[in-house]
Length: 388
Image (tube, rainbow, N blue to C red; front, top):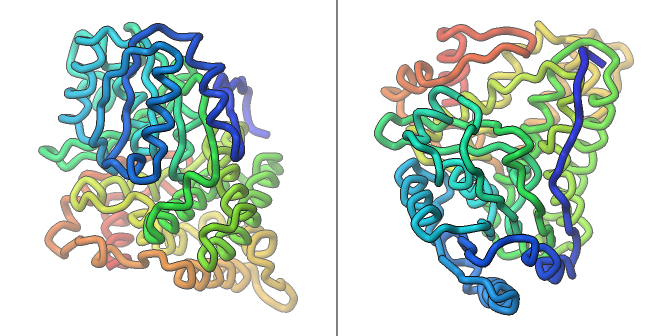
């Protein structure tokens, strides 16, 4: 394990088919005014909206709705929600939806009482919160982001074509999250499999860093094998409870800060994917799937031993009689085969990227350290071209 670290996660989880009833235990801990945040209205079709309203009213809450949170929440929507929260003096934010809704709720929680432009403060200057924070709770309906148990929030600025994430501290983590796998049954197949790859990418971007013998790597290999196994089942039968519950649990542990401990981590796939999202508004998980293999094939020679380990321990590649490079390559080939069978987008053209966008996307990509190679602008462009 590398370095010194502190591990703390303050989010309380309620998991399972009966988990929503525990909302009655949490709501009395907060004040009367609740901002009820949700997306495009699918929770009204499923009946979850009515259940939530009944519970809120049963706890004598004054309800202020903030609907219409989009898959890639915009800065304009953030301004709107922050004003609504402040004007109504909300005591608590209840986010019901997928990762984007949870991300947005956390952004509102730190922005409602921010004395300056939150986009500039949190997403451009990456400053810490020094103002009042409105507490957040989540009821999850789609898995992938892990936003239900971390401080991450991603906001898009359509005017500048920037999609930027800020990982806030534990003071911004949801106070609790309710995870019922059945709530994930109704999302479209495209969104479901996109979520699967978001989970996989979160794990891989922490896994492909460092060369030490690290407990976190062993945990991640187990999470990956569980995800691969369960996702194959879920693609064939989206209502397989065991598969969907395992995937939901894996998603949470993939990005709740546990497996990052003792790691340097490499988030370049997310940086490239988010830059693409800023130009196309494409589904997040698909922007990651479209660029992952070109990126990993580029950096494989610089982290060959880890890629070899990945091939053997995750994809069951038989190493006998093969060079390290052949083993590592076979692992990525098996990953590609799995991705295609799962129904993931494998090129950025399918997401709306055109040749004339590539230079601007590359320039909008934040270059981070921590992986086996620090990319140059030219190498990011190379990855993008290989992803077309």
